[in-house]
Amino acid sequence: MANLFQSVRGFNDVLPADNAIWQYLHNTAAEVFAAYGYGEIKMPLLEHTELFKRSIGEATDVVEKEMFTFDDREGQSLTLRPEGTASCVRAGLEHGLLHNQQQRLWYAGPMFRHERPQAGRYRQFYQLGVEAYGMAGPDIDVEIIALSARLFRKLGLQDLTLEINSLGSSESRAAYRAALVAFLQTHEASLDADSRRRMLSNPLRVLDSKVPATKEIVKDAPSILQHLDDASRAHFEGLQQGLSDIGIPFVVNDRLVRGLDYYTRDVFEWTTQQLGSQGTVCAGGRYDGLVEQLGGSPTPAVGFASGVERLILLLKAQGTALPSAAAHVYFCTLGEDGERAARKLAEQLRDQLPALRIVLHAGGGKLQAQLKRADRSGASVALILGGEEAAQQSIQVKSLRGDAQQTHCNWSELSGTLAGLLNLKA
Ligand code: HAM
Image (cartoon, rainbow, N blue to C red; front, side, top):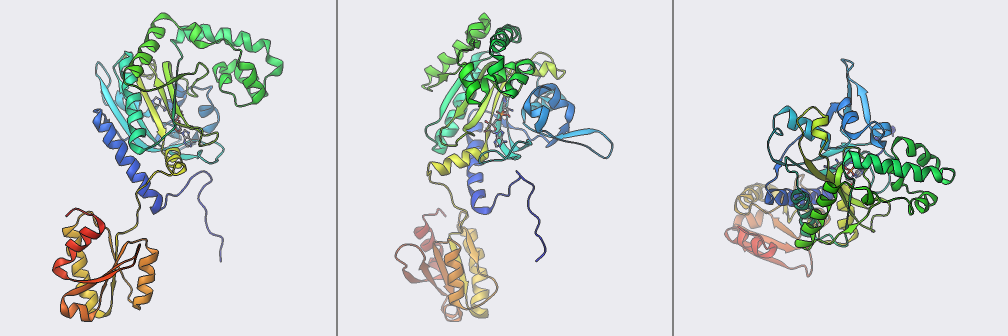
């Protein structure tokens, strides 16, 4: 056999069994977003490279080494979006949604980063994201966190920790940066090579290092919370008060910095211990400077994005009851009369029971072979209709799960019988 093509490394197919879970996740998220008055926006997957350089930051891992960037046929540099926030601001500005307005938006879709693939980390991954514009106070930060908490609750996820921090204003962060660099310089010889490089280009990221020796050193680093300006401190206190008011537990983690440069003030992450090193299932924060940086008027903004694959890994790891893609009913037919009657009946059933998932056997063959297929399909009920039943306008109904019972009924009773067996509404 010739060598088969394989998907590009880090780019995965999602097969029907998992797609049922994706649908469920998407629909649940869409319901929660709507419950808070967020409207869906769809942005393109390709943007001008400059957009991400200007927003995410030249010295970030994402821009330095993770973007899928290429020149198109006209020679312009384009990039597959590594995240949604920059595109959302671009779209908001392009369509006049942001100036002097409040907006609550959400999006879902694939993002692309050339990272080293491993469980929970892919080169194409999906995010569910939320962005809110034009609201400067901590109330909206509380709102989007409450929204994320509700989503995770509704999905039945457990043991998630909400970590929060404040990165302050760009001025207070500059002061902190200087204090941090001074501290890191006194330990320069003991830092890993990557952190030594970052110490100069993006020192806050050193706080995020996974290298044990560096982690040990940064334990004693100065805290960013000690360097906050008064307004950012009050804002951060407002966030904590708001979360407490609605009973959302949180942990203040002054080592929480984000990998993208646009953040200001409050940032947060939802983390789990159950997904190894890829334990962040949702992350976000405020980015009050970005709209102006991309050419708009000063506009406060806050948002988050949650990784769909990680949510699904966690749902599975926690053994949450998940929807199945399998059909309810597999319809076996025998002989031409049986086939023709079954075709009509199956269409009638789809009219009568819109939630019913019914597979009508195709391709003929013996009953035994058809029943084997029925069993493998995951259906709970097999219907059997041959020439004899067609003549009598009756049908055999065979339960495929539990104690396999078989009964007969008339065509006129069939939808009622199935609705009862499968617990479906007409
Ligand atoms: P981020 O932290 O880069 O933030 O990504 C958000 C989430 O996307 C992560 O917490 C994770 O669940 C998921 N994720 C990121 N990279 C991967 C990957 N390679 N494979 C699988 N999942 C991944 C942002 O993207 C910001 N735009 C979030 C935001 C929105 N901030 C404000 N508004």
